[in-house]
Length: 121
Image (cartoon, rainbow, N blue to C red; front, side, top):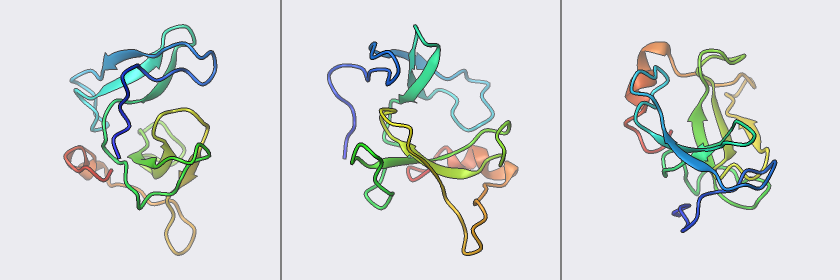
C-alpha cells in the first residue's frame, strides 16, 4: 500500500515535480513535522509524503488508487471535518465522511492533536 516512489509526485496542474517541505512545528492542525509536497511554480499543495490516513477500506479515487482520510483545518466550511482525497494529489477527488443523517463528521478541537498519532486519519 506504499505510495512513495523514486521521484516526487508531479503537480496535476503544471506537471512539474513537487518540492518536499516539512510542516512548521507550530501547526495546530495535527500536522507539525509532517513532510509534504508542493508545486513551487503553482504555489499549490500536492500531497503529504507519508502513509497516514491511507487504507484499503477508504473509497478509491478517480485514479483508481486508495484515498487518504484526513481532517480539514479550522478555516474550512466544516472545521476539522473528516474527508477523503486522492492520496497522491493527482486528481481532484474529494468526498466528505458523513453520518447516517448525511452530516459531515467532525473531530472535536480538543482531539485534533491526538489524531496526529493515529495511522488511520
